Length: 115
Image (cartoon, rainbow, N blue to C red; front, side):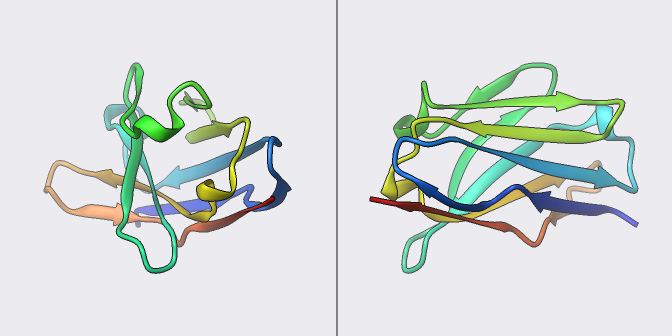
């Protein structure tokens, strides 16, 4: 069964850092890209970026502050978030699209950045 589990969220002061993890199982992990998205209350979901062999941050507001990496042996993708701002407060999700075109999403992890 395909499963994605996010962890690492929490409450952090503005200017602080967090590293989110996405543990994947149930498919050939290294064969597919993993993406991070986020959604704040009352706002539309935003794609943060994706990583396959290389990573791309798609969201301009976090470029230079967020980076992605992956460990294929551990079947885990990471989102390193530095210099956090209150506007980064959101639920962060990892997700994949497999060969069937079906998308799988994790449950999300809450990130709250205080002023």
